[in-house]
Image (cartoon, rainbow, N blue to C red; front, side, top):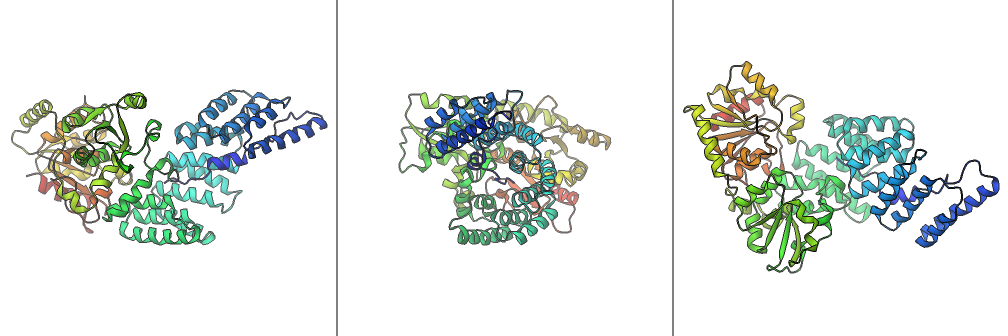
Length: 564
């Protein structure tokens, strides 16, 4: 969804020495300050930072916050964002501080990828000067990155009143409309942008993105056409456009181009909506890109995606262990016991290890992003299918405990785990298409249904009780934290029926029988366009809704297969 609106270069270029002299200075002082301003800017342009500091030190009657802001310009120009942050934080502590230090600090945090830190500062700067276009764009950029669609639209509309047909404002609004599931309005605005600004790359990308929400095959054609136009215009491809196309390439099973574009997620042109690595990892070399690595040296494997994708990418871990030999996998504490059981030849550590990794005396190659393993080892659909097997090991004690408990309650009935919502299906949640009422056919078939849905499900539980159905829950467990229990419970069922969410990956990776409910034509890329079986997991079937079928009918069809 992100539109990169203001770069650090732009922030630096537009930040002026203007206003550094007191308003009540005599004319001679004003003239002197003007000369000082020019001298300071000239020194920065020449990258003579020592001279710039001397000019600043010799400037009299300069409010402290302004002095600090200008010191920040020096450190920004030197590329020292850490020092700049420290200086500008001191500047904004002054009660009489103006808007410029806030604006510059937002730019610093944006360059660092720290949009959550930038947002409150950008909001304050925007309130201080609500008509300032540059500040407004910085604020909107933060809102876009943090998926605050309604705020983007409201802010963009206000700024558009005085900046009619401003390209970046219109693009931001179109992005927000799409993110807010208002695709028709977004398409209309994108078409208007392209009328005013023909062949605008971001608008073309947005048009393909919107189309891709429904039809990846058609979207790929549009991405390719748009990228061809951009190459002719600029002499090089649009990195952000290729990144956005990557999942559509993968979904349409053009895996070669898909994995190549997937690697672009680390590029600065993509921003924080790409593949984000923590700073301690970014400074290390990519072991998988070295001309030659040493299997006797240690190689880090680091995660940069959610837990569902982590499980999917772990399907290639055995190949990586076989090639690199000495791998050290860094994961969250909640994942650690599962990974250690499942991959006994893999050294597993927690993120805190990264703080001291470079200081350790062990010999090292560098690191590999976990999400890059499939691109190395799963370059064709056949390579996925040839290695399709269960690879997650369930905690045996927990499995026996839950298996016994559920069968005592079921008394011979089939036991089915259910999960009806997830992040990918937010648009469906909003329209209630995946509301629990659509899942009643599973209960009506007499199965003992087990709640495997993470998050708050009290409303759905009360609804089912009101219908007189038994629904097994484990209220003491938080499935987002207690992953070992979640995995064991799902494995202890006779089968699982779920939308495509992390549960499918966990259950599928341990060999459980899973029916994926697909209410819309498209889902996550791993499910493909018309696949009926998962290419990654051995017992995972994909059920897509027919044109004349309701969601309830679809669930009934899935239940007929799983509940047996």
